[in-house]
Amino acid sequence: SWMGKLGYATDGSEGGVTIQKINFNVDPLLQKQVECATTMTYNEYWQVIDAGLTPEDLVVFKYEDEGISTLEDGLYTTEENLEDPEMVDKLARFVRASMKGWKYAEENVEEAADIVLENDQTGAQTEKHQTRMMGEIAKLTEGSDGRLDEAAFDRSAEITMEGGMITKAPEGAWTHDITDKALQ
Image: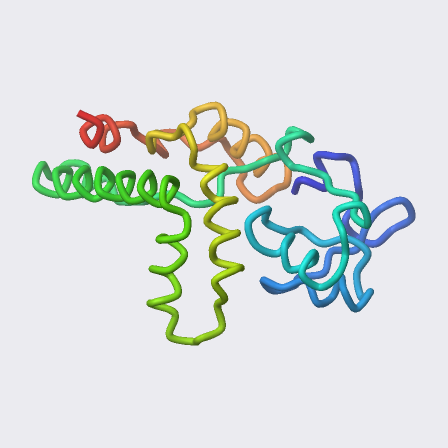
């Protein structure tokens, strides 16, 4: 969708690109199976750096700078839950506690990384990676109180409509009711 917004055909035709799905690693880029890969600033980008490339080896296009960033993670519920005062209270308490946790993690990056490591049942995570990831995520969450950014929602809807992923603008798809209650 964002390639279309930038004016690139995604069917592999002349002047366009061929889209190839990759998992949460950058092996195809490192093995020169692809020339470009999408990464998260807090994860895969650093896999490339850890593999031996330097920031100077890379050309980075930030979606935000290109006007094509979309919302990613969110909290979702049903209209039925929003009509139930007891559930609204539970959701607000959950959001309040979550935001308190994120603020704590922003201010205590090393401790947050340690908590992840203590709960890593795979043993695959490293302190260096988790600390760096939390530091990068702290940059993304800094200044947020948990409220949905309406402009980001509208931009995301526009981009997904242009990309054909949705056919009409969503109506009634979000509310500030829970975050307003959580922030009281």
